[in-house]
Image (cartoon, rainbow, N blue to C red; front, side, top):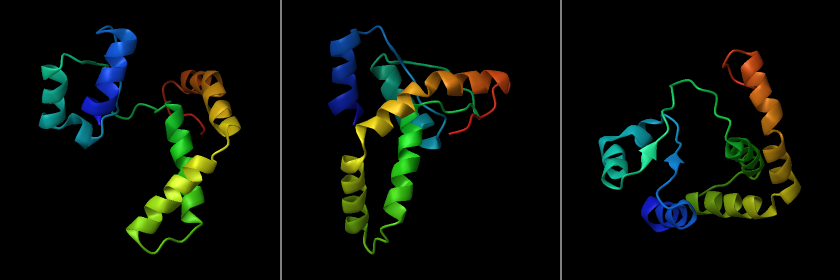
Amino acid sequence: MLNQHFVPGARRTFGNDYIFAQDNAPCHKSKVALEYFRENQIELLPWPAGSPDLNPIENLWGILKAKVAKRFHRTKAQLEEFAIDEWQKMPQEVVKNTILSMPYRISQVIERNGKKCDY
């Protein structure tokens, strides 16, 4: 994923002047992953454990998950089909509003001394 999509796009857009942000999920901190970033000279943003995840995609994943759960899949293939279908039907207004909610969510995190904001 990184080799095929992220790195070429990031380098086209920013050259080598960017910092990659990711959470502290175990798969993101594996020896293999960290070695990949080091070998490809990708600077990582230090991200403390338990930090509120303000990335708008997290809100969209939550919306998508709720919609897919209502469709009662029976197979992995059906789950994938339903997820793709619901993602494609996601109104752009929902995506836009999620992004536009960032200033409000950031102010909540500040008011709560770094604790999670409402999603």
